[in-house]
Every structure is written in C-alpha cells, then in structure tokens.
Image (cartoon, rainbow, N blue to C red; front, side, top):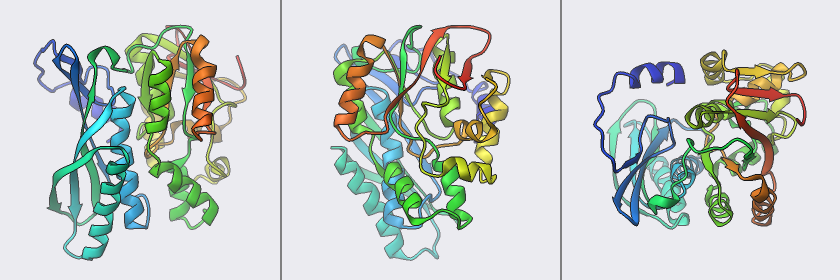
Length: 331
C-alpha cells in the first residue's frame, strides 16, 4: 500500500504502552524491537510480495534478502525465519519448491534458521518471511536518531523498480537484468557489519517507499532535515534512460504525492532523477547517518568488502522549512 493510505490506516490502530517496546510503529521504522532483559532484545519483522524475477529460485532469494534486511537495519542479527507464501493450485510444484529453496538458502547464508511457515491458496503467487533477530538494547539502530552534522551513506544503487518496469516492457538487456537481480538478491549483512564495527547514529533500509520516502521517515522521526546531492547517488545501469522513456512504476507516483509538500528539488535536478529518487526499491541498500569523523572509515570498510557502489550522498542538518532538499550538486 502507498504511504498516504497506510498512514491513515495506522492512525486508527489501538495501542498499548509498554516500556519494553523500544521501537514500535510511531516512527515508521523497519522493524519492532522488544527488550527481554537488560542485555537482550528481540527484533521482529515481516515482508512478502509478488514475483520480481522470472526465475522462481531468484525470486525466493530476493524476497528473503528483502525481509532479512530489516533486521540488519536495526543493528541486529537474524535468528529465525518463517515462510509466508501464497500459491495457486495451478502453479507447478517444482516452481513452488524452487521459490522456497531460494529463500531457505538465503536465510542460511544469513546464519539464521527456517522454522516453518504458513501457506494459503491465491491466484497470484506471493512469498516472503517473518523474521526474528537479536540485538543488545544499547546497540539498537533506529531511523529516529540521526543528528545534525551527520553524513549520509547509501550502500546500494537505486533503480530496481524502474528496471523491473523495463524488464516487463522487454527493453532491459541481459546485463542490466543481471545487475538488478544480483543486487536485489544480495544480503545487507556486510554493510551492516561495517556499520556496527565503525558505529553509526541512525539507519534504515530503502524499500517500497523509495529513497526519498525512507529518507523522509528518518528525517521526520529524528526531527531533522536532510540535504541530498543528486549527483552522488549511485544508480543501476541505464536507469535514467528508462526513466526518460516513462518506465516508472505506479508506486513512484504514490511516493511523490505523499511527500510533495516536504521535498524541495533545486533547479537542475531533472525529472528523470526525481523519478529515480522516488522509485520503490526491492531489497535496497542501507541509508546510514554517521558522524563525519567516521564516514570515510566506514566507506572504506564497505569498499573493502566489495560494496563498491556505497557512497556518501548527503548530510543531516537542523530541522528547516523542507524535510528534504535535493541539490543539483555538492553542497
């Protein structure tokens, strides 16, 4: 669901106050965090969606990586996962098996376990995971703790939604498709390890609400504003070309409408780049707010782990008139 509709629904949900619920729905964070003891907290999340790849095994991998990402974004490690699946009776059993196998292997890669799951019959296939992770209460990362002066690092390039539209239109070449699928299937584990090793103030992952949607959640929850250098944001191959052709998914327009009054684009940030920044991502990277004294160290560690696209894309400033200002170049 789009952020505008979802926010209206959630505003009517009854709530119970519990001091041990360290992160709930108030800040639109990536997962819930509940303190069990002074030294241990649970991270709980779930995510599932319709196929984003024709290969059922890759679809399972991507869906699992996407769900596991929420745990990494909160500073934790995945412990246990449950399959969530909707399949048609007409879907061949080997296709279902490959989806589940892809997800299970990605969970194992994360060092976690599949403990079971639940299936229902549905005309359109859907797959994902409910994931439980662990974190020390003092080490929880949140989207609500960015500080003025922080540098913003994005760990994966943008454009998976637009490339998905190009694939459906038969316009994306094999190299472009492979680059997008490879990125979506990649865990955010290495990036999270670097964040934890160096230390960060705030973190979120970039998924369905797009880069600007999730950046806005960080800014709003942290009571700050953000400056984004549009020329520094890493992009998947040919994304701007596809955006220029109008191959922009409907979710991008939902994201834009929701944030229209809170995001200012400088002259020089063209429509194609704006569309990419609103593009809903599948299994996107982490957006990390880090002290500027630590930023280069963190970035180098990421590059050393093979995350060559990770880049500094902006900074945090005191709250101002606009939640986010997108610049046409470095500030």
